Length: 435
Ligand code: PA5
Image (tube, rainbow, N blue to C red; front, side):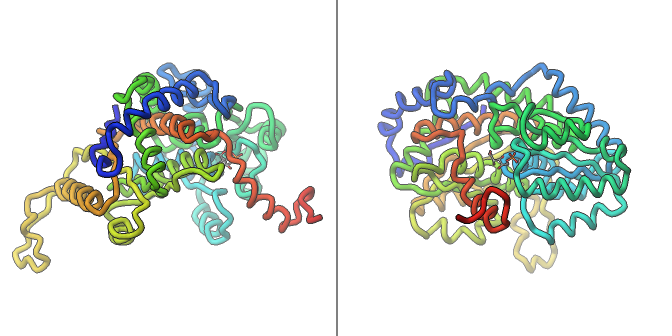
């Protein structure tokens, strides 16, 4: 189980406060599990964990095998919930520089359609020159502007390079089973396709083909990941404060009620940054509505201690932190001796980098708590494919419970449409003309 330690929040909240929340948390958990709350037509994510992969997972594995054998690069097109999950898991498990370590039989994985930058697009075109590549188009609606523009361009690039038939065998669509523009394109063009179930929202879709196909192409064991999620589904159904989901959901709501406005979700692993981005969307889109919600921000330590550290330590006291920890890897780096010792580091001779990292963590924790910033710690244990599956499900469940405690529908995102409406009007999209 992931261990949630709340011993560093007691300066801000008291045990009786937590205990009085028991009924509220139990009710929120039951609302989610029984499907009786707002947004209950989007609870399909609870059925995604499995120990016995079905036909869809087998097809994903076969497609990934083909892509690994015929492509130097796999380009994944998508945005938001159709993008963050796979990138988060790849970077967490394989490091932020994962693409530099790829070679024949192990394609580089690049993401596009998650913005509108021409510079980013030009760079991608350059790196695709002379490379064999395949693409996955991920869009539940099939009409999102950013991925639609990238899809059109990449599809033409593939057709120019491989001809219509050759291109067809290198395009994979991941979308709604029945409706939407992408489903129609996949059917008309004969692209292999995978399904985002209608009852699974974008930010809860990482354990569908949305996450599983890119992850399998990256060489991650998706069966292990799904089993890890199943471990979580079983373990975190516990209905008491022994459940770390309860602790996390209850404490973040208590801190919010006590005036905290920002949750910093951080780790001492650089590969965690995109995972923090996935968490940001999960909690931000699920809770930020009806004038409520904690503002979710992610940070990377120790790097950001040299940028955000001052603000965390002595800025406005409206922040709390959630620090995520993983066991140190088996392969160690030991600090050596230097006979001149001009940098004064010889006092660390023979110590491992992990040892220094651990002290940095403990030092940071104590400093921030002393500075009036409550800190929740999440100890995840060993970092592996299975654990990441567990962590995904753990956080999805925590998010659902937390949002119901907050009193909002965790599964809609009406606010996301506002910028789109303005953009479409400015672009002159038919149906969006100014009156
Ligand atoms: O969580 C969500 O629903 C959103 O972030 C969507 O995933 C995002 O807007 C992309 O939508 P689509 O998959 O329809 O292209």
